[in-house]
Amino acid sequence: MNLRVLVMRDDDIVLVTGAGGFIGGHLVEHLRSAFGVTRIRAVDIKPLDEWYQLHDGVENLQRDMSKREAAFAAVKGAHQVYNLAADMGGMGFIETHKAECMLTVLINTHLLMAAQQYGVERYFFSSSACVYAADKQTDAAVTALKEEDAYPAMPEDGYGWEKLFSERMCRHFREDYALQTRMARYHNVYGPNGTYDGGREKAPAAICRKVIQAKLSGRHEIEIWGDGEQTRSFMYIDDCTCGSVRLMNSDVVEPINIGSDELVSINTLVDIVEKIAGIKLKRRYKLDAPKGVRGRNSDNDMIKRVLGWAPSVRLEDGMEKTYRWIHDQMVSGGMSTANGAPRFAVAS
Image (cartoon, rainbow, N blue to C red; front, side, top):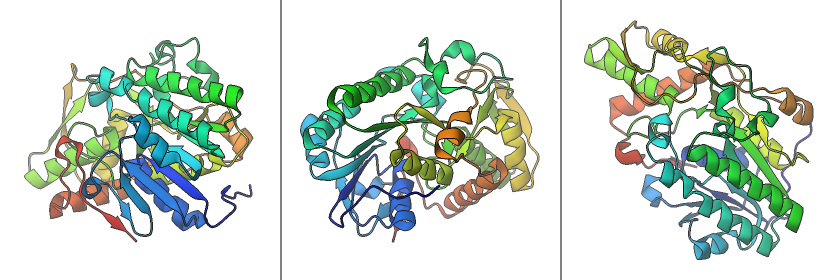
């Protein structure tokens, strides 16, 4: 598949919101290094010294996209908009902060309004597999979720409802205003330069941290949320950014899965990290901890058919890179993610 970014002139601007976050920071780098995009406006609510990655040669701005005036100012002059801004985290966060997650709808609302007013060429919305109906995710041996399985609607309470509603907004802005919107349903993205403690981390990073702590402390045990038999698929960050840009520059207007279809249990994920670390741990299961649906996997038939591509990084390979990065951070003390605040990182 021949792919090009729909930026036709040197002065065209690509806006990335949530650029101080995990996926946003990697997306900015991917647009620069893989596609040579020279004018990027990177926006995040966090102070610049708390961004996961801060890139030279990029217009880096601290702005709150839930505020109408800030959103309109950020979008003005942009050719493309990638909206990755959201108040979210792992299951431990979204199950206990439903109202905060719902308020993210203000971000997408204001950015869509601004994109329509200023004639943005393309608008990308980062949705989530949390939009899928809960009654299709009750078995660990889950049938992989197809895009149509989001309806009849019964998404993850709070966070999932916000994502599903925002998808509908994108659809109707396309239908009513001819704004070209693209929607990706991400499935459990992981990798280096992300949160690994503080309460917003997701399972791959949390397990890496716990295994490293056990190894460094000499207390060879690990706490696992649930019974460990719940299943998920996990997508490495490079696949996520590649798939996002492919989708943005395609003709696909319906929401589409961007996720690995490599289904594993949480216990298997722990096995993988133990092997990387060269250690075996005693497992303690916290059965009353937040654990989400019983099983969730991505059906990739549609993305293979319409984009001729699908995520392909093996979980063992991605987890080794993630583990090594988190290990280096923990040993060096170079990152503190208390309250979700990451260290300052520069990518040139």
